[in-house]
Length: 207
Image 1 (tube, helix red, strand yellow):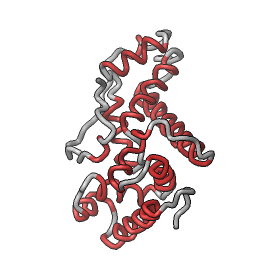
Image 2 (cartoon, rainbow, N blue to C red):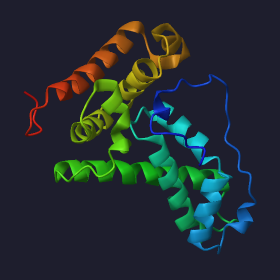
Image 3 (cartoon, one colour):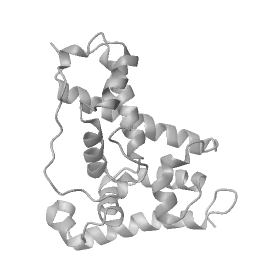
Image 4 (cartoon, rainbow, N blue to C red):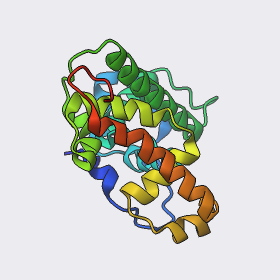
């Protein structure tokens, strides 16, 4: 199993260490390799440190995206684009960062479209965090993810770090999260956004 772990990894606390991702592969070996082979390499050994990069990106953005889902999509994105990677013109670190940004855009778009079209939720584990955190059904949890992910980044990160990961508000504030009043207001906005989904009726509209 890849290092992405299970669907509820997002709720685990950060180790608090200053972790820096590392590339454990010669970037020159990526170019021209078939994507089907690259994705196996990227998932099995995670030589691009995609799992760690996805976790750090999630913590800095506060986006509610299943981390295993993000990891696998980032690996697929990197494998697909890796065939055309040019080590002479593309520095590997910004190249990987771009793949993760593309991954996030893909997944957010997928959730918005499937929610707007009211498509069946075929993979409820993608929304397991709020299903467990708020006791929501899969389709309602998907709607809650979409609404939350459209909140301002400072609101998302405050709720993610304090409400989900369990960081103490004082620690969050002292690490640049804002004043106590600002944090209180941000958490309140996030809670008010999410709590409506605990009162959804059968038609998918808040009561």
